[in-house]
Amino acid sequence: MITTMKRIFFTLVCLIIGTLLEAQDNPVSEFEKKVEQQIEKRIVKEAKVKAEAAPLPTGLIIICEFIEVEAMEFSDWLLENPITTDATLLRMQAQEWVKSGSGKIAETMVVHARSGQRAKTEAIHEWLYATEYDPPEISAQGGDAPNGENVTPANPTAFETRNVGYTLEVDPVLNADGTLVDLNLAPEVVIAGENSKHGAKLGDLESSFEMPRFMTTKMTTQVQVRVGDYSFLGTSRLGKTKMPEAEDPIVLAFVRVDVSGE
Image 1 (cartoon, rainbow, N blue to C red):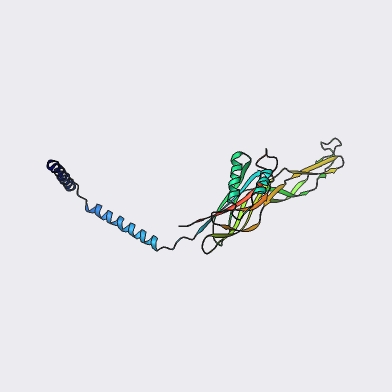
Image 2: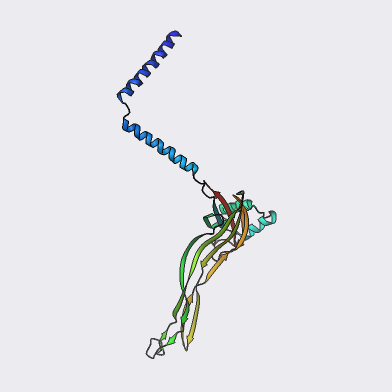
């Protein structure tokens, strides 16, 4: 036992001597010491500034979802379940419909806002279309028509632009204890449909033009949401379904608010 202790002690002594000799062979230069000191001072200064800085304002993450489901399945669910202020269970059921193929997430819109300030997010493209036309006219004889007449078609004279796509505009207000959010919001979906055809006859000749048709799904409402919970906004229908195989698709609209901070 004593012999073993001596061996361990001798080994430790050798290691210490070796470390001291290595330190002597590689002394830290004055430049390296100054660099280390400057780095330490900078770290301490940055930590102090961060500690004394005012905290960042609380941010609100507003999530709005449109989910298409079969109207009959939603009706069956309503017969057995009440819709409560916390609509998380309904949102979970909608996710099950999506996974089983009887539902589809039409759109998810997310915007980061500050309490008391309006926020807006858009996923749109501008659709330019004519709104007014000059009527068609019959020109002089010698045209290509069988009776020798030539028709000048209706000519567009005024245009408008329509935003086609998804828009979410919201005014959030967080309460004092940071648990409830009052939302004034207006999610909107605009889809371009098939063009409608218009025309006029001039004798035996006909001149026609087309105008676009737009289908709008919009909800304007005020709700109070508990942070982290889902709220059910209501139902609607899209002008052009994302589920062409569905018998009777209906849209469920949800909103949820998460809080972000420092």
